[in-house]
Image (cartoon, rainbow, N blue to C red; front, top):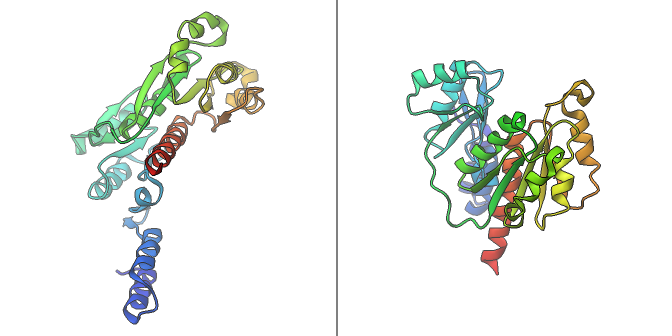
Length: 258
């Protein structure tokens, strides 16, 4: 069944009211494919934004994720499903054997991307504690699957600041920093005072009762006295990776233009 909006664009080109170039841009905004009655795949997202559509795995059934992945396969070299439990991942792999499950990151992935040598820069990811690793690995695996170089530095929270300071060279060499922390969320402020690049704070839901499921860490990061610290939502490692990637892609584009 032809989308009526697409048909109108094609008719406008045929009648000479619309140039092919303008029509192409309009079609980029419209193109999608339906998956039964429960999903619509945005097949032009990568052309518009530089990153393809990613499946939110939590709250979807294994069968829904399988169907969406199969529908995406002709359109994307890399397919990700985030927040996938081990049990759901096992069901997916039984139907799609080439799916790789990154258990700590809770990501199912199709495709084996090579690092993109055209992209300048490196993303360095830090965690305050070991309990922050699932969120940090979600960021790391996402960035790596989309072709970025990633450096990891785990368990360098402010309660043992010497662990961070003894790895100062990793902060100095970073082009974008993702700093993942729960409890009071102080680590991004400390790192922001040392770094000469953008710092993305990721609050996690790790912490005692007054942490309020990550709200305390979120507010601490939002109130950071260190300039140049941006913050994404609680436990949003995926969003931090995409933001870091957009920063590096923009820097690459500007450098190529110069």
